[in-house]
Image (cartoon, rainbow, N blue to C red; front, top):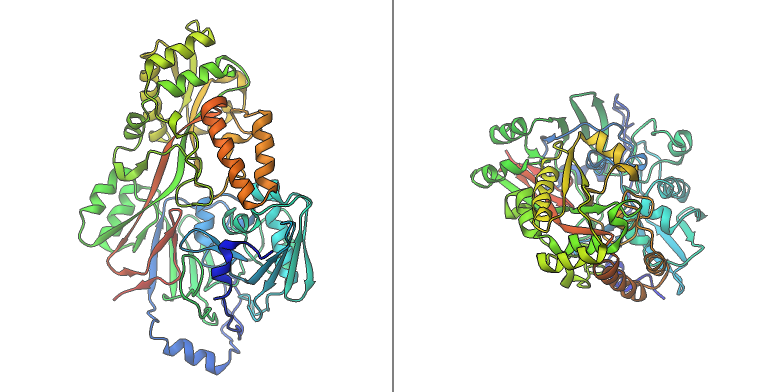
Length: 535
């Protein structure tokens, strides 16, 4: 059996250009020597798409570390995607397709994946990428990425030959390519750096991408420079797949926490890109002639029940809340502008059609107080006070909680908001004795593995035999069987078990000025290759 039907159209089109030449060292001091082939240098110099200049980006926060294997920080991924490349990426249709892997073979039982690597790929230190580097990098990635830990577990990527890596699973799964493309950043690094680092961050930031890491000036910026020796794949741009070019000489990623400062800088040209437009500034950017907004789903706002202790250990109480809520009113209060959210019952966004499911939608946004009261009677609710943990550190969480409190009051449920800072909320929610409800978000997931609302270890404690059985099928069955199991699980979650109440998707807004051309985003994260800075 071939890899997956969704790969066939991409695999036959993937041809390889041999990457030649060496790049300079990716430390803070550049090596000025180069021994690249003169033909390649001439090609880069004569490329009609070459633009040059500086791209100045305002980020809302500074990363704590910039090794994407060992952190889930979005700002780390944003900062390092131009530097590191991966075996698999997603195309315009959100399907996983090979990238640093030229092709992928999969056995009929979905247990053995063979990755045939592109040859001639060079790291920024001039070293050629081989299977040794890929296996080391992927084994480091798999012990940190949540979904990979579930599906791959202790199974290892092994070297077959210089340009072939193999993964043989203890349990079959069709999800491996999707996980590599979307779970954390499965960055390929030199083997020596991976082995030296172990569980610690790597000592140098060296990848194979169109940009090199130059330096990080604490509390000010990260500086990336064009990889002059990078040879793009001669393939059409297709989402994150295909041709990647460094069309600017330098990228400066400035750390600018104040939303007004970022917006003002975007308007004046101090910044070319604002990586996080504040909700209250959406109308301002939409009305500006020289600015462009980009809106993309980034996560799901979710109401969590404490199912271990207290009143919500009774499913009838959870059903009562689900029946009572007017979700449209809640999302409007949280995000104000309709462009900033979408009502949806699905755990997986419709952008990912393999896993988007219509199942359970009849139980979404019921807004039926009378039905809710019937569930309360079944639960034997006697007016117990429900502690609702919330925070003003994320104003959307607080605003949603206020509306939920009022709606539950309308069915005679006593809710007390406990407003704390975010750090305190994180601490308290781990203790089932300290809360009954809280609101949080989970990022857009392209497949069901690793969803927090269905995790028995995550706050809320979704411990249910049927859910665990269906999760096992999803993780190990063929794609068609897994999709059927996912439909069944989502229908069961909404209609019977009610682990949470999904409220809807929230959007991430980024913005550019009119000097930026070719900009796209990936789940709300800016992408910097193929971006030109106009004069």
